[in-house]
Image (cartoon, rainbow over all chains, first blue to last red; front, side, top):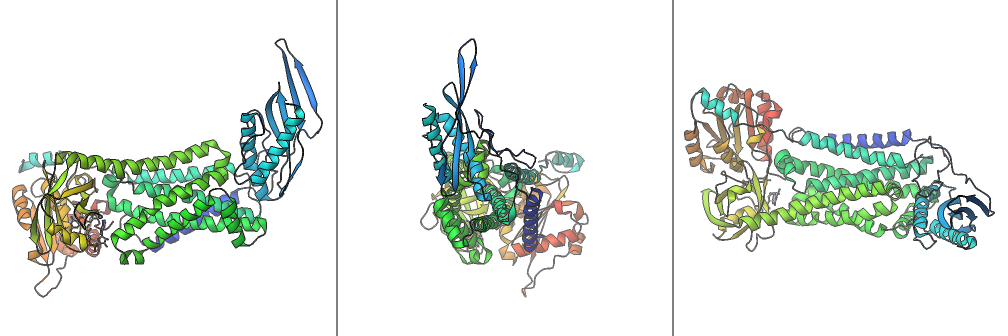
Length: 172
Length: 454
Ligand SMILES: Cc1cc2nc3c(=O)[nH]c(=O)nc-3n(C[C@H](O)[C@H](O)[C@H](O)COP(=O)(O)OP(=O)(O)OC[C@H]3O[C@@H](n4cnc5c(N)ncnc54)[C@H](O)[C@@H]3O)c2cc1C
């Protein structure tokens, strides 16, 4: 590369063409159908949303029961009780939000999202990034006094209210 | 000095240590970084459904690439020694200009595509969507301010406007870039899906930007401060060399410890009213001596014309050494130095110090007239001492330009195609010479050029 040979216009053209085709190729290579948005099924350590077309559709909440269920496991060292509680459905500007919590020995160990606005891609995207953050915060705080995720204010408020109602019901 | 004989030549050859420019590995590294950034997007995007989402995704890709490129653009101007002295300040400055334009184009594409995509999703007008994005999303007001600043910088850097502007005005406006980058950084973390979803991505981004900030603070602030506290330079004297050409002698402590090589330059700031606010680049016109440096300057504008009036004792603030037009550029063999006008300065220093056996070194000096051949007497003395060849070419009495043709060069130097050629002169002349040399059979990689335009 030497300064006497380069033709600036050619370079601009080349850069533009390369960038546009690169971006187009990236977009074309991604699947174009809606695989149901993978809402993380939260475990004690929430996973980031899994990527790729092959990821199984796991949006449908596994436990849709709205009843309290209590499972007890008796062991020699003591009792570990696992309790699942479903929170209220909170209506937000963009749709309903509802969570279900799992308590292990009185400790909040998982938060499952049963409903979250995801009718359009933008909502789905917001849910996809905000839910893991909210869950992480809730598990860390062991309560519903957590911050909203910026850019996802409505979803956050719905999530927090539903979580609070679930915690209230659990008598924690 | 070892002169004469094969032994002398062999010794001279042994002192030649060609050093490769790290340009190619650096460019490869930059592309790898871009690939990693694209992978971040890829990894975080399960699918792209419908036109609106394609727009948003394209906006996101261009945003990520733009932010990455801006980090590089700033790193290129951090005056990192490996870039300045091994790749070459002029070449890095060209990279900087090129990647700067590219970054701004990406940022514009990012803004347009994102807002357009969002407005498609929410079925609102583009303008109202833009307002929503700026007012409702976190850190977007800052991002807006930063983007406007970037556009201003890009606008004043566009060729036509820059040439009409004072260099200093342009330079200080350019510093807005730092503020712009700071302001636009935060919205990437708080609204960018890649970063919200992944702590690793956030860490990587912080690492990238903090590294760049560290380079800037270290090499643009701390290094010059340390250098000037250590060497405490002052103007020793000024000497008129030719009409409109003045040498400035600069004294200081332990100047041989600056690590400056023949062919390099410093940015000089003279702490006297009127000159305090500009730091202009001038090459060393002699190899550094323990207590003395010298620059030789042709009066072309405000700064360069004022140097003749400098009072001895004036404090000097220098930054450097920069520039890759040094002995390390050459391969083993003979050397031709081509100097045009003020371009003689680095050539003069190289003429004295480039390792070469007698007869292996030639300097051709082009000037308007014989009076304009600044430093001619000392060039003659060096030529005599080293057994080097010295030639000049000046305009005829009628103002006609001397023809320097491939054949003419070959007649003087039949083995010119086996020379390394160092080239420094006004842009038009340098370009002309470059093509002449190529026609005379000098391979491109053996033509070493430095532009006096940064
Ligand atoms: C690496 C390098 C080495 C140089 N070595 C010498 C030398 O040894 N002897 C010599 O006479 N000249 C040298 N120059 C050229 C010299 O720097 C300019 O002629 C001088 O800065 C002009 O400033 P001015 O205020 O007199 O003129 P202006 O009319 O203000 O500027 C003329 C042009 O010089 C350039 N310029 C001005 N200020 C700067 C600056 N701070 N940094 C970069 N470019 C600037 C601009 O392109 C401008 O258009 C060198 C330039 C470079 C880049």
